[in-house]
Amino acid sequence: MKAEELIESDKKILEQLRDGRCTPAALVDWTGLSKQTIHNRLNVLVAAEHVEKVHESGLYELVDDPQG
Image 1: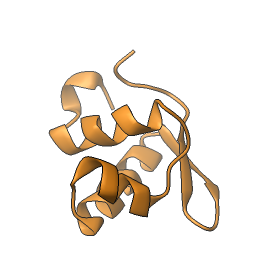
Image 2: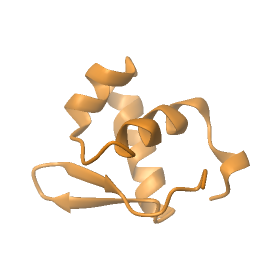
Image 3: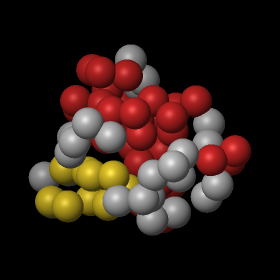
Image 4: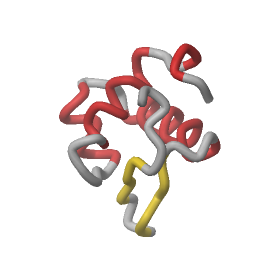
C-alpha cells in the first residue's frame, strides 16, 4: 500500500502507532474512530505489512510506515 492509497482512518491509526504499540481499544479512544473502523483498517494495514499484531491480546505495532 502506497501513501497515496491511505484513507484518513489509516493516517489516524498510523499516527498513534508511531508513538508505540497500541490496542484497538486505545486506538478507538485516541482517534475517535469506531471499533469496527479500527478493526477493519488494522486488518488492511496488517495485510499490507505496515502493521503487525504482536500479541494475541490485540497489541499492534508499526513495522513499515507507508508515509515515510
